[in-house]
Length: 326
Length: 271
Image (tube, rainbow over all chains, first blue to last red):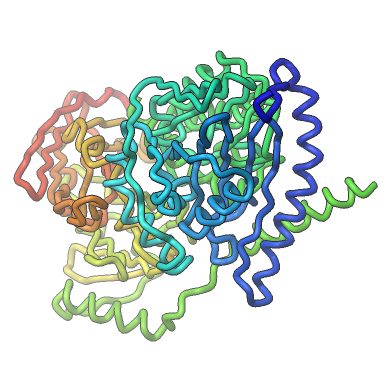
């Protein structure tokens, strides 16, 4: 044996059930720690879920970036393979990235050869600087570079306002760009990367760990936290089908529990995105103005979604400005 | 049991947290400071002409808190529309406060106007109506928004430029006899000069729609002077007095000297 057992394939339901319990505990714990900084110390403390098979996930709280959470509001993961380590989303700030690196180094001395930035959003990318000295390949969608060009300084400035410049770090541009599909080998462990068409953003990557049947859809799959639309609603519905065709046993979403049953989680997200799509299209056809639509479309879909009130209206605006040109 | 309690505890914390994050602190600038700012802008824009506050001649409908600071829908209504010659929309704390000046022509129905703007920070938004006898009347609302001006125009500058100058016009039945509603959509990034390229550290040069004329047959509906606060892919809804068989023609130009013209058939019997 090479130090780990790959034992999940075809055992999704059971594994997801087990992890769900762990998540509940971690979720409560994580939030407790986030509340502590109100007493004065800006602690950035999260626990890491060891999912087995060399797979680790830091499950983030459903919050906006604050000094208290150091921008650590998206899930970050790493996979320790036989030969090397791959990081998926290095964190929401350089402070967050340094924390992740230290957690990796507590567990393995293997080289970190790949750091994947799944899309342009700051909660997924700004930790990359912490990994520069490890000299990994920084992997991004072919559209990530122009997206960084257009948005990087805006995100940087907003994040500096919240976290202070010392915590934010600088953006690291991808050193390897993926425009279609790529495979990475961590040592008898193939990770397949797909560059998606515009969906959540216009530069989304997903990863599939072929050895364990685990999908890393990043923000193409939101669980519990309301999905936020920043690319193309029609595209997202399309790319969701593409992910479903992989039929993964389980998934590590960009936001939500460390591990979920893919099919159920995607079905739930599709219910919301479909309601958003149908409602927005109806509003446009009926000549309902964008401001009225943002207040009414999909407004009844909030049950079970955290931050729904903060994002649904905005999602409608994004959907409306896309669909009104149809 | 323990598990249930934990779940409840977590849920309670989530509620507390979301509630907290949604209620941002109010702006520090006192009302007096905002009023002083408005007086300065008004003096500059209107050459110290008298501006009378009004509750009746012009009204603004805007979200109290913008969902998307780069696309804030604003509706102006002018109930005594026969008196109205033109309207100004001013976003006090935007880098260039005047967002648009719309002058109504003979084919207009100046009862209502809807447009989309970028809003950079918590600010008063003023609408000023100019009556046909040359007087100015103003009203204001306070809008909470942030970062709308420096927010990118699209996923990338190249994407944002695609299809520049394409236009659409949608028509709907108006509320009054002979009056119909039109929505004009123009593809244009409306770069306002505030979007910095991360790599070059240079700002994408400003390039925005600065003039639009809408005509129905040979009569003018609207003359619009736009500025950097109009959103990417500007959209404007307005009412007009329909004459069957006459097309709508739009001529738009931007600050780089590009000019686009397009005509649209108006479905007959809209009214």
